[in-house]
Image (cartoon, rainbow, N blue to C red; front, side):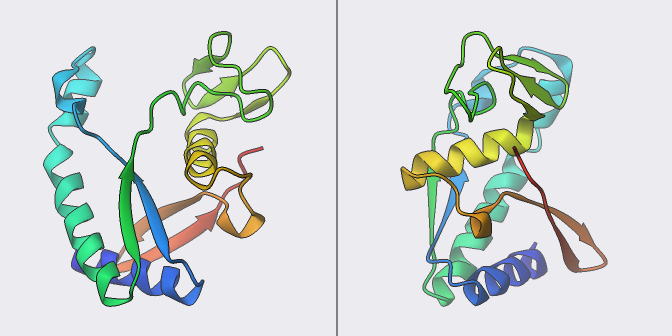
Length: 144
């Protein structure tokens, strides 16, 4: 965790990032709607431990870490804003307006757009991090 937090913060600092927004998972342990979700919530403490480490490390570089609500981000269409008529099936989010994209990456972009109150810049595109051998491999991903 320490190495991942340090590597991530150093990358963010080099990119000039001043604030990192993370999903606020307050209350997530109260909802157990499936066996799979129940299993995921047991890993919640690891998430909190990592966020604490990330915030501590980020502070060394003058970067703030802020937790914000993720509510409805995985169901909201980034093109038209529709929530009620979108369909999430596995990794795909589709909307009657014609949008189809990766649900988690779309949710990440929607989350970031809400925090910034503007469209995500190309540089702020959601990324997927894969941890391997004490190095973080970053892969840019398009959400639209």
